[in-house]
Amino acid sequence: MDLVPSADSQNNDDQTEQCVVPVPSMEALGTADVDSEDDEFDEAEKAPPRLPSAYRAKPSVIEFSPVSDNGDNSLKVTEEIYDPCNLSPRGLLNTGISALIESLKFDVLELHIEGFETTVFEVFSPAECFAVLFSEGAVPGTWEVTGKSEAVRCSPHIKLVKKFRLRAATELDRSEKIVIAFFNSSTPSHLLSPSRALGYEVFSASELIEAKRLTLKRRLRNDRWNFWGNAQVVLSLDVIKHVSKKEMITIEFGLTSDAPRRNRMFFVLSRGLPQGTWSPIYKSEVRTRDDMASFNAVCLECLDFHGGDESKNFRLELHRWYKNGRTRPLGFIQTSLEKLKTMHASTYLYWWPADDGITSAKVTLVRALASPSECRFQFSLTSS
Image: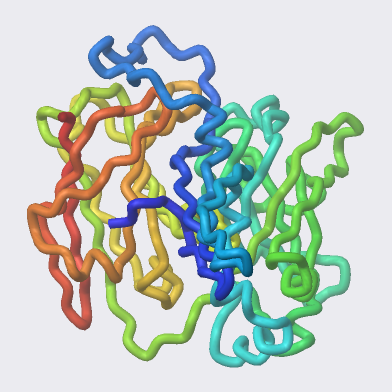
């Protein structure tokens, strides 16, 4: 179990060691007017007084300086803004462009997509929108659908669940133009084209590989309306490592009878990216208040789950869902497959509460099975 929720661990410098103690927080998802049926939390479940926001934003950084010439080896405490992306990167981000391109003979690039300032989508798509990836067709000027993905809607912020694998083994593949486009949930398949999208952007794998921190941030285009907000798309790359042994990973999650009763809930599995962000890899179904005992089990291949690196952290996030499509985070647990394999049944995992979420809860590892072909883990949440 991780004591500090970060997608990557911090490397220590030879001359100066740093110890960052951030307070975790989940993205603010915004709360809208909800139906009368969606009752607010009980008084007993309201969050206790939170730490000052300044502490959450500016954790102390204690620098252990080496002994100076005058013999002064006192501790020096400084303040700096905490940003997960400022953590010393490892692995993917330490790889040079030439070395990364060389590894693509065996490994695969995976595209992670987030949309920001997408409130304008709600004008045209009250329900959840979806995204489509297009590649260049055989006829110049045409586009072919490569894949579709549903979104985890955290208005005005959306994340795509399904990841797209990019062809990047050759220079021709890396220079091929690709389009990511967002559509209204009611758009039929035969009308899927960038010109009919709520917003789209054109890019190539080469642009992403050469971008700083393997991340591109672009403003979405639109061909149909002159008025358009500041909707943006953030494209990030992760490398799926080639592994000879492929196992299936099954995650089961449920709530005991003592758990706080909510009208509707769902959970999301998110993988930590080298850039310091989190990207969803699975979104569960929404459970109603009459059927909260357990969610459907999720079964993923190891490459989809951790990208070929068992030490990568992942989160199991619990969200509340409202009738108008809005969501609210309730909290999460964070660990890695590597650590789960060392745990035994009845182990407790730390619950990181979200603001105005489930502030006091206990998550138990009910069952743990690890074999060369399959790993199965069952979690249960109980209020405490």
